[in-house]
Amino acid sequence: MIDNQTASYNQVYQSAINLVSRREHSRLELQQKLQKRNFPQAHIDQVITYCCDSDYVNDQRFTQSFIRIKAGKGLGLNRIKMELQQKGIANDLISLALDELDLDWFELAKSLYQRKYPTPQPDDFKSRQKRQRYLYYRGFDSEQVRYASSA
Image 1 (cartoon, helix red, strand yellow):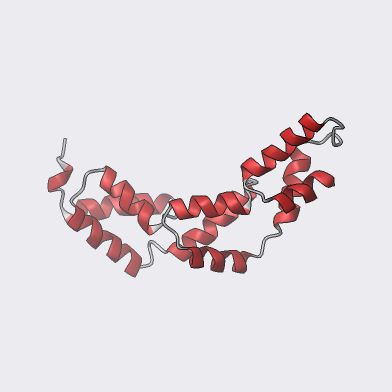
Image 2: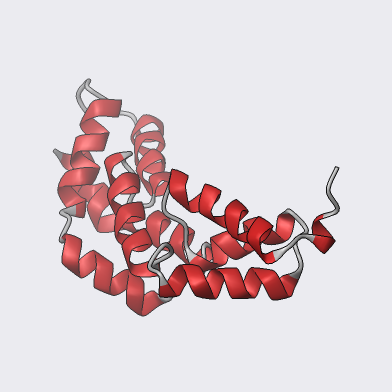
C-alpha cells in the first residue's frame, strides 16, 4: 500500500480529477476529501489552485447545481443555505445563486406537503403540528409552512 504522505503531485492530481469527474465539488469539500486521503498539504494546495484556475472546481457552479438538486428533492431554503455554508460557500455566493435560479419556495413547500399528505388537513392539533414539523425539518420557514398547510 502506498504511503500517501510521500505521494507525488500527479497522484494527488489524479485523485482530485477522479473526484471532480463524478460530480461538482466545492473548493473546501475537495480539500477535505484529499486531506482525508492523507496527501501532503503542499500538493493539495497546488492541485486545488490548479483545479480552480482550470475551472474544474467552481464554487458558483457548484452552488447553483447544489441548490437545483436539493430543491428538486424537496428541501427548503433554510436547510439548503445551512448545507452550503457547511461546504464552505460564502453567503454572497449563495445569495447570487438563489437570485439567478429564482425558485418559488412557497409552491415548493405546498407541492411537498401535498405529496406527503394527500389527505385533507386533520382537525386535531397534534396531527397538524406533526405535518408542520415535517416542513420545518425540510428547511422551510414559518410563512412557507403556513402557506403549504393551509392549501
